[in-house]
Each structure stands twice: as structure tokens, then as C-alpha cells.
Image 1 (tube, helix red, strand yellow):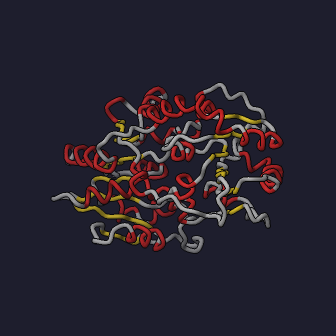
Image 2 (image 1 turned 60 degrees about the vertical axis):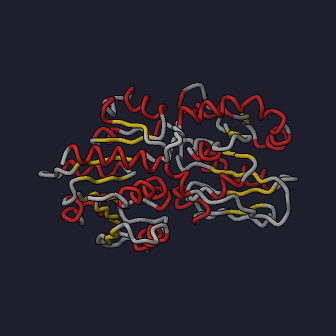
Image 3 (image 1 turned 120 degrees about the horizontal axis):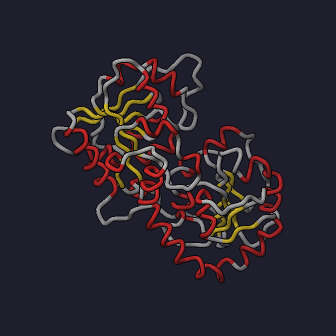
Length: 356
């Protein structure tokens, strides 16, 4: 059986599907291809596949595409239409982005579409009408399965909990500064309505530059990094990363001592090991809904002048949040002793063979 993994998104999504693709490729009677218009993405895949288990296929790049890179990909819709024949010949197509659902609009399209939903966050933007166009959806935990069903985006038998396979490719803890000061990770999201950076960037940066006793990693979501001017600072205790392997392979979330953010699902990657979290509500939003459920996992501040005090008491108040952090992780990301890659592969293989 032929199964295709469609890699038309930016590199940060690769870590959510690659472990399952590699697991499937090890199994008899399965041939797994990775389809991408990006040599950079295919080279990154090859770096995790030294035995060449995956068949890497370069799709045609639409005209006027940006230069090939890990973080800027051609128009997804244009890529789908230009490569329709090459994509549609696969009976089962796995992806982590919902643009692929547009293939449903092409007359005669008969492939089964399987979505591995990337991330495990709470933001309402993670639930779109196109999610309903997939034949099978894999989510990280019970929370996402429950919400997908409640919103009518999946029937109970078309959404399954498969865990968070990205944890299997995460980087090791690293030292990014020459001294032993604790490290704060600032991770603003790209959503212009919710991001702490879009409206408050200068204020946030000034507060981080004046911070004493801490090193700071500023690593915005790669989509935000592609949309805003480069963040620049001469402060020696600040490391800015506008898009690198470190920014997507969990190098920073495993290496930081405290987390500063807004609505990014990376907070759940950080909480793989419970640690202090601080959330920025600089627009003073009503955060009572489930879209801000993670704000109950740490301190929430409404003014950047409150950051030094929040950091000073972070260790002391962390025990009060730890039970909630552990409970939120259990709900958001199912951490079975069976690797997520194997669980996802089992679900995909069973589904694909049942409909072949």
C-alpha cells in the first residue's frame, strides 16, 4: 500500500508527522512517500532518515515562489493544484495542515485524507471548518478530541488520540549563554489579535533588555518571525532567534527555566517538565474562556513593569501551579508508555487498509 505524507507547510510542522512516517516505512507491505515542493524540507527529512526508509519526491514549485527555505513555502493552494495528479494518485494522504482539504473540491478526487493535528494549544484559531473535510483526524490528547467533537468538526469514530510524536525528535537540553544565570524563554504567537508582540513589541523588548539576573531567549513563532521586522537588540543577555532548527526542535523549551508567552501551544511542550510560566495579558482581555485555559497554569501579568517581581517569586509560587500543570498536560497530551509514533502509525495503517 502507498501512503503519502504531504509536506507543504513550514518546517515546524515536520516534527509532528515525521516520527509516524518513519514508523510506517519500517513496516512490511507499506511504501511511504514524502511529497514536498521544498528541497530544504526534503533535506531535513533525510537528516532524520539515515537508512533511506522514506521515498522523497520533489513537487513542482509554483511560479513566483519565494526562495526555498525551511520557513517560507510556496502558496499551499497553488502547490496542490499544480501537483494535483502526483498527489491524488495516492490512496491515503497524511498531512498536518488543513489547506489540503481544498482537494475535496476537485471533481473525482478519491483519496482518503488523514490529518495529524499539530500542536496541543487552546486558541480557538486551532478549530476551522475545513477540519471537517478529513476522513480521519489524529489529535494529541483528550482535550482536542473532545473539542473537535463538540464543535461538530469530527464524528467520534473519525478522531483518535495518538499522542505527541514530536517529543520523540526533541533536542537535548543545551547551554546557550556563557554564564549560569537562569534562562527565560519568550515565545510570542503569530495571531495578530492575540500576540503580545504585535501591539506591544517595543514595550516587551525594553522590559527584557532591562531585566537583571536572567538570560533571555526571544524565539517567536516562525510565522510571526516571517511577518514582522527582525527583532534586534544589543543586550548581551538576550538571544534572538527569528527562525532556526533550535526554534522548532524544542531546544529552547527543554533548556529554559521559565516561560513567558501568550497563546502559543509551545507552552505544553515546555510543560513536559513542570516549570514556572508567566503569561502576558497586556490588552487586559477577559481570559475566562477555554481559549485561555493555559493561563491558569502560571502567573498572568498585565504590565511589563510587573515582570521582574513575577520572576522573583516564580520559584516560590510554582508549587501552587504544579498540580494544574500536570493535569493540563494529561488532558492535552496523552503520554502513553507506547511511543506516539507507533500509536499514530497503527491508527493510520488500520484506517488505510480497512478502506483499500
